[in-house]
Length: 476
Image (cartoon, rainbow, N blue to C red; front, side):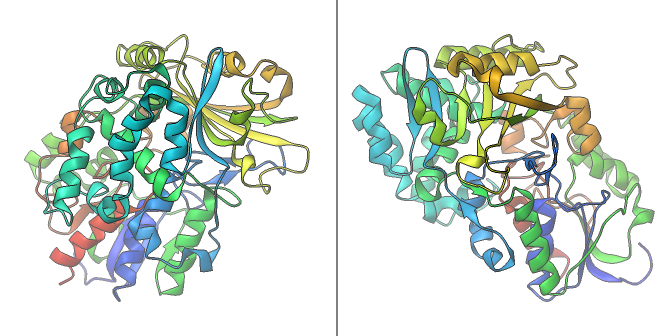
């Protein structure tokens, strides 16, 4: 890196955040190149034929409430580059034993109408924020240590978001609303009695009420495909099969951005980083892992409640208490017997995923980091609980254990797809306690992955905010 700069910026990693950082810099007129170790771009947004030819499975992310709601994605002409968002009839369903499933619908009032005694409370608590989501989305999906654009709305959001999921659920009297909240908040992948877990669920609910929980036509790879196409159209470069093991592998540049986990960046940069910053990286903890299951089906999942058949996402976990117990087991380093399972049915909205008469399903559950327990039977048993006969429509399976996820993408250390635990400390200081979380102790090295605010999700906001930091500090 001692020679004259060949590029204004080099980005390591071609996932949504890396490509977003590159786009933001390129559209300001700077020369950028994205280096990807794999032969294929995409990171956490790739689509492959995992079970059989013609069946398109999303390798990692599948449903994208924060993608459709992302202020950065909305500012780009991604539709002109092949991205089409498709909305399922039902955003998300949460089946329950011996009663109708509770549904998240785009309309706040229609969602509330299912909640009985909690209908008015839902409109008051969630609906009052949903109408303000578009204005405060940039504040919510950004670093905490900066002046918000809409401080009053953010304070109202924060009064709920900073609490635990259990507290949030207990603001409602009935089991239906409580179950709905639990399923939304369980996306945090930490115990639901921890602070800030309410914020994860509330964000997903508000995004849904604003812009839905869509899938990308043709698979999640269409998102990174569109970002890459737009980047190239404005002069950016992408090079695949380019592994970066040390700073010596980088072309000369004025700034280098890592769309990798914080640990990978620290390993590559080594003594380029200060001892204090390296200590902070060692203190940054991994989150739990996931066990993922992709299924080829001969027919749709036979849900006991047919309304679940129209849902792009199904939260399979039962009651609030059951979902809490599942996440607590993971925190105790135990593989839960009855795991909370996230199920995606992309074919509900997208008929390109499988030939006529065939179907695909995507599912995962949380497990301890590095777990070696095969969770396929437990995942299928939970789905069978709410969809009797489910096993009979399974034609083929493809599993990914935590170790296999890490082999697929080194950023998923131990199966952690979040870029680091979403604990209270690591939400407030992600990855370390710095006013600018994207800028490392080295003036020309930046981090732009989900190890930075706002954290996991296909939204590009980590990359966008990191790029803005580069523009302020290194490319002035």
